[in-house]
Length: 421
Ligand code: AMP
Ligand code: MG
Image (cartoon, rainbow, N blue to C red; front, side):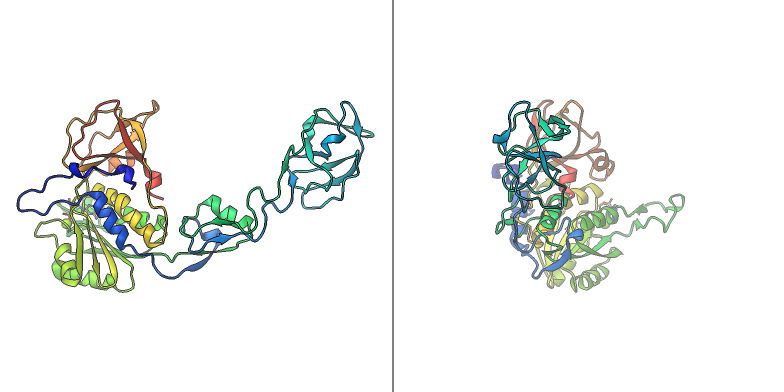
């Protein structure tokens, strides 16, 4: 997220006695970015399939786009100086799109269609709605200006220009632009290979046990579904390793296996401080735990480390915590692994149409929805297990530590679609 979202250092919560201080989000993000060295290599993919991928090389155009001065309208091309009020100009040629005319005889007009090259000698096009076809030719009813309705050669792209840069994320529009320069394949960063697993003995997969047969204490594994979908949206390949039991040996074994052949191991749950939370000791047994526990709400238990050659990110088990930490921390990390130059989503200032009277020591991410009056409504339950808030809501308010919100205050809002792309 942007430095515009930065919490002043003074707002970081004071450490509690006997506990390591929670990491301010901006510090954690800076450390993550510093460690997210772009993956080596590149892939050539069909321009058709490159949406969302990160360009690995500058794209230089070898031609002007458009390649010729051409007509922006269906109408008549002429020399503006040949016009006289009421005069009829003979029509000396017809130039449909895809064909090329010849030099325009002076004192005549060319019937021309959108996209057709302007014939040498003509300097304006008058749209057919402003013309009257008569037996002898055409009467142009409106005085043309030189350059009118002419699209200039190279006005979109000039030959030799760097049109799309290394590190840019391709969008549908940029695929079209690349195609307009003749690129049928694009050099993009390799996909991030992610191993994903959930921890928790309470977890059951939908489809394995019917809702009516769920044992007391059992819950469906929801994180696995949105995490996988979010990873796929960011162009990753996902190895879904399922559910790992709450045992240290099983957690160590899963991490070890995941560390082979993957760039990132992403887990959910088991990363807090309880006796059933084995992620932290397992990572420490196999590698290095670099970051643990953020000064954010939801999402405090977030962890980052290394296991073998793979990055490790441990997300909290609570679904909303998992979801929010993915958007705020994992998304920019994954984009940077792909060499993306811009990983920040800039928030916009929007008035809160709600009160949030109790300031928190941690920086908060509130689930909100834009209303028709141009303000933000707050979901009525901001609990970290209430996934409905992320479905009802259409974005997050980034509320600095220590700040209460009164109705009408401007708050920093980031829409979900920008955070999920
Ligand atoms: P943990 O972080 O493992 O202590 O889990 C925190 C809370 O999140 C507990 O209520 C878990 O049951 C719940 N939880 C953990 N993993 C998942 C998951 N994959 N899907 C849904 N809820 C989960
Ligand atoms: Mg657990």
